[in-house]
Length: 154
Image (cartoon, rainbow, N blue to C red; front, side, top):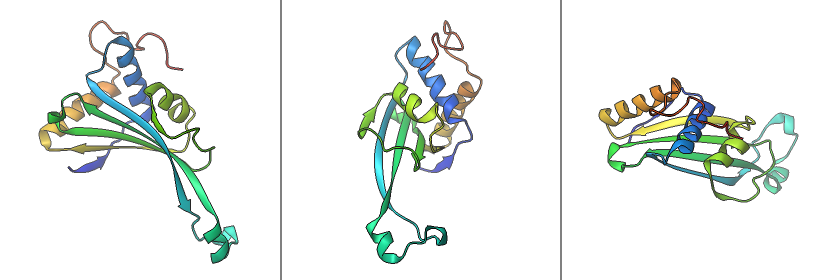
């Protein structure tokens, strides 16, 4: 499936999803997880480390991933938000997290760098995803829902 970057604010996407979930069960499949990735320290002059010191050290990055897909896989798209945090403390546990925790721990405080990418099966799937992104950007919700979705996420 072709993959491309999406120019929609990750916070806007997550806040829209939270509002949708509060109003009724979602028509989307949403899964979030966090992991810790151990990485080699890059060779940089400002670190003043030799090869042996760099081999003995590593850095840990916390990576949070949110995957959003249609309820029916036949619609052929996947939207993924990835937040990489190399500076903050490592995650208190790895594994599945819920959408509110993803928002509280990674989006709201602006931890790390966030990217949004889409995967689409074909042009029809891309059109469906583009329609959803337009709905999110305009903060539209199904009839009977307020724009804020009731209470604000915490």
